[in-house]
Amino acid sequence: MEGGLRPAFFRLGSSDAQRHETALRYSLKAAAELPEKRVYLDMPRLQSLAYCTVLMLIAGWLLYIGKDVFVPVFFGAVVAYVIVGLVQALLRIPYLGRALSLRVRYMVSVLGIALALFGIAFLAVPITAILAIVLSEFSATRPVAVLFSKNGSL
Image (tube, rainbow, N blue to C red; front, side, top):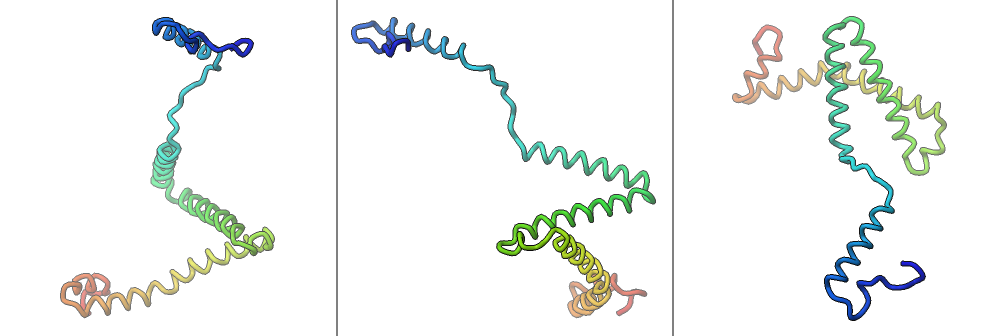
């Protein structure tokens, strides 16, 4: 709108055809002045799901092909990923996260993972025994308890 004048389609006394023609002219002029934009489908969840699926397929294939080499490497990468994730989670604790140094956060993360792994390994036998005893008390779950036994008898 040059000089602050109104476009012709706002002027009184002009016909509808003139108004529409002027409005079309102004909209085409405004569209020509806009920068060209590319339209992308923005679906970050679908994209991350596709990437994760491809990554898991590649990881599964590598673990199948090189069991002796890649299983420890893959397990180490998962443990390192969990440690870094725990360190970042410890940083988000209100009032305490910023006060802890990076070394302390890593120590707490490694200690937590080690306790979880040793706790699971140490408690696996007693938990299985307790589960077998409880399952053997009910007639519907007795066949499942027999699967837990060494020689098939309770």
